Image 1 (tube, rainbow, N blue to C red):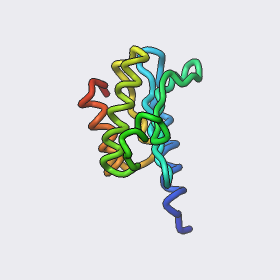
Image 2 (cartoon, rainbow, N blue to C red):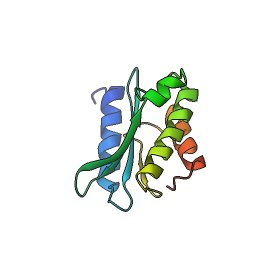
Image 3 (tube, rainbow, N blue to C red):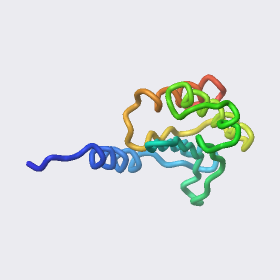
Image 4 (cartoon, rainbow, N blue to C red):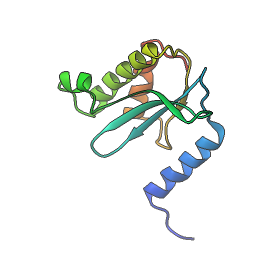
Length: 120
């Protein structure tokens, strides 16, 4: 049996999740992606293939807080994502963790978004 690295495991989890999770205009997919240096959040309508709202650690509001993409920054980003969703008239979403485990920064983003009014 071949050794599978972490990246391949995450990609497999992501493919498995995406088979089940899809966003619509009424209930878009809240996709969170974490890279080495940044965190990106998007609200995607998979039917039309459009991004309805987005925010990231590159956002001026995020940078104005002198935040970093760590646990505290992830919580701030969850709040900013919820505000961006409200501005786009979105209240219910489907959470897509992109194959990452629901732990650490991913969990902080989800909990902050829920506390600021998103339902998922």
